[in-house]
Amino acid sequence: MISVPLVTDCNVQALFNNYFMIKTLALLSLNLGIALGFNQQAPLRVTAAPPANTQADRGTSTTNNYEETTSALGFDDQLWGKSGDKLAMLESIDHSLRYLDTPAATRAYQGYAVQGIDRNRVRRSLVRFRQLLSTSRSANELQTAVRKEFTFYQSIGKDNKGTVQFTGYYEPIYQASRKQTAEFKYPLYKLPTDFSSWKDPQPERLLLEGADGLQSSKSVLAGNEIFWMRDRFEAILVQIQGSAELNLADGTKTTIGYAGGTNFAYTSIGKELAKDGKVTPSQLTLPGIIRYFRDNPQELNVYIPRWKRFVFMKETFNGKPMGSINVPVTPDRSIATDKSMMPPGALALVYTELPYTADGRSIQQKLVSRYVLDQDTGSAITGPGRVDYFMGKGKIAGDRAGVTGGPGHLYYLLLKG
Image (tube, rainbow, N blue to C red; front, side, top):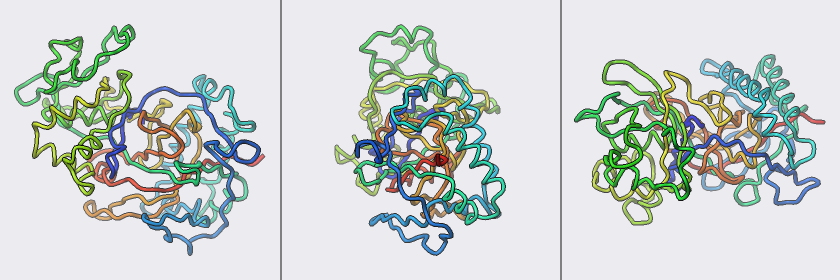
């Protein structure tokens, strides 16, 4: 999200090849393409709308052999029932509508490369979908209406066949202190006042904080500490996720979000561990990586500096995690994509397996067709074949995000005509 900042830094996945990421606030111009009338390599293509009344066909896909059941598209039964989140979806739509009325959205949608796709159409589509969602009495009724009125634009994916890799991110909750103590000694930093004047090449993480993360007093970071963590890897995860809620040593709570970062490319710490044979494929989950570093704390000094990018935070005073379009991200209703290709704030549909907990402990994968809003981005979320899915806040969200990492499909929904 960019809060995580989310800004934005949020990316936890079953395969840590794409876990370590930083979300950025840059809203790049869209470069959407449609297979009808444009070249076949365009990021999006028009696809057939799903037929109505689809319950019988759900659940036919598997992670190992992911074949799309088109009749399930748009059948979002999670909007209804005792645990339904229709109100959350409506609120998320309102966030996108607010964004689309801003000068930032006008700039983002200027010069669209694809005829017929513009900010006004995206906005009208959201307004109409909101009306349909408010008046529909069931998943079948909503799906039938959407099929009738909307055009489905499918991402070509990473293979030009529509395969999209999904990962998950969340907002963690950690213990911290406003003051350095023997217990809380790993700092988080605000954006230096002179950061805009830092010249290339900018300093790497190793130069800024040292191999052990405690040498900032000898660098340009001195005096920019805003909070102190007692666990070094948790301090790194704050930078990765881009936001966090902090339970402070004085008994108060606050939140922090993404403030900026150095201009190095994304490096996956998990991938580095795997490359060196330190972890097995079954250990490439967030819990597995955490266990490895807790069992081998000296390895933090080796692998953390390989992530050369450095992320700065700011106190957000119990605010909600924010996406790259500067609106709050909504649990299970917001996604992050490559904003050089995908439309900011637009209505989208994800079709993939996602983890859910029934009792707060056991996690089961469920095939879902879920309406979402594209409200975030990330430096590791590049190309038409990547989606990062916001799970929410806290331990359960983190557990879910830590085992999210599979194939699926991504669609954008725009009113016909």
